[in-house]
Image (cartoon, rainbow, N blue to C red; front, side):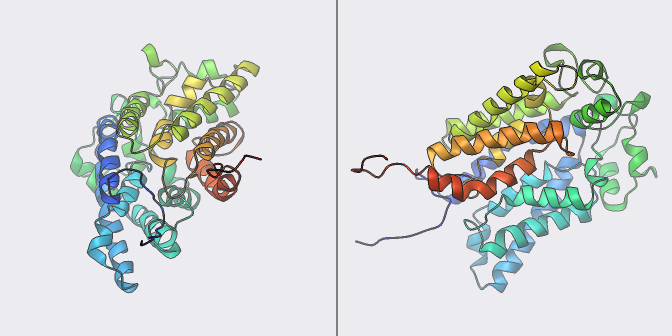
Length: 355
């Protein structure tokens, strides 16, 4: 009898790592397409930059470590990390910042720890936080939705803007991002946080054109559809059993509970549960980030605790911290707690009584 030991991710079906990574990429497609529809070509250009950089960095490090390059690149883990980062950053972010983020994610967070299965933190989220702390102004310059654009930016305009800082007609980044009628181009979460510091109330801020009406009255224009598209991809992952329900469901329930509690305490300054769920990257993070099989908890009870605590930290940081979205910070905080969670949530050994 031969006993084989291997590092995570451990799959309980007949799919290998490359198949799992590809299916996650397929599940991201609806959200990426929707994001491109509302916010322009930048997400696709950033994706191309990130993926090409990730493959080059991974290949170079694998060669230095004398590891099989083709086989390791074929697991698609570097491609997935690059795509997760590309959809998390502003579409018009300068290309060299994207390259720095990918180099940090692949070279430092992943390969420095030994490669796939050995990284303690989610590489894409660590890279996002590094970029946010290093380049805060650039990382908050999101494109306004197409319906609020003062200038229509073509594919070539976005390409020039990302690589040169100017569009084909000579507009710089600030001029290109300037929306019509003076409407802020900040994300809905940024807009809310800034407005609250200026003595506006939550319900007053929802009357801005940044937020859309209809069934998503508390969502930012376009953001609800992007979130729901990622939700559809996440449900596909659940249906195909690529991920389990424990982390995404506990994360969303936790956000709903803590956001509702604060909203009931003071409805003038705390957003509703619906506002927090459909704005920002909560649904994307719940299904595509927090469920990372390497850096997340590995036990059933542990996953529920892990997801619930991520939801708790998201609400705490959004309402009382300095960063409006907070998903990346919440995930990293709980990545550090995974060894402790797993230690105390190990299932009872078969044939032994529980304590």
